[in-house]
Image (tube, rainbow, N blue to C red; front, side, top):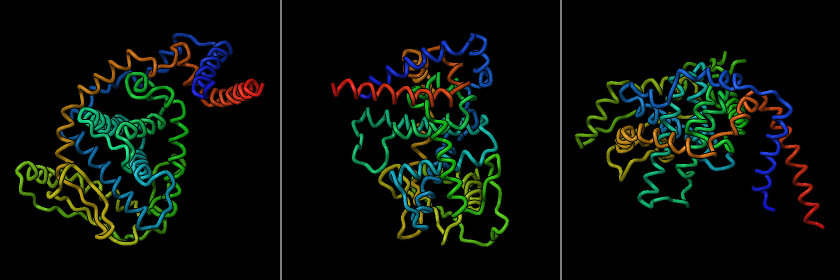
Length: 350
């Protein structure tokens, strides 16, 4: 018997045992969802350029994470691209006081961009399995999992509507906690901020006001579409806002410059250690603008798929049980899994 069928068998057996041990009512389930009932995914993003700004911020923070890792010689296990994604995601989340609507919409924008890119890669048969970056679909689930893990009680409706199969959602709270510990270690060693008891960033007492900073330089493009993007970037002051937050928090051994560049072969951004610079192509921002138009159809599609698939739902009578006693349930599930694996091993030896 393979591990996966055994695990699923164990999971549903465990649910059945747990349900008998706990009294669950319909009113409990509705109460669990009420905290998020006033927000729906497709009611968001009414602010002009919100989707573009969110993904631009993530792209900048991702490349800045590469700069932090390389300039400080930080050892990384599991791949630098995945590490940069996690640092960027967590930096965005801890700079918000709580998981509120604006932050949620930002994270949904970023997740959606990866899903849209994945669908386009599949459509054009351009999936690069050999690439050092995780697949776009993996990045979609990674970002969504951290978002969900940050506020499981508040985001249950999001998970059930469209975004996470419950097999991945099961440990997202632990994944978020582990990433938060990693970010705390980075802050202790490579930052001008620390975290208070509520995990809000606060300046360190001995932080110097004079230190190497991240700067920006706009290369004037020739294409009219890119000129319009440049005008928007400069007028919106979004980049200046992002860099203000970054320079308050991130400790670098030398200055870093972000170059907005028009002579690119496609939508891209990357860290260039030879010039201590980050290249951001106007084509990348152009892609964000195009994909913003694909957002609502994507969300509707995901919702339809979720409604037709068991992957996004725990059996309904277990929903309240999972949300209320998840930590205890996880420990009991692991114990039962170990017992079933041992029994399977004994059976095979005979």
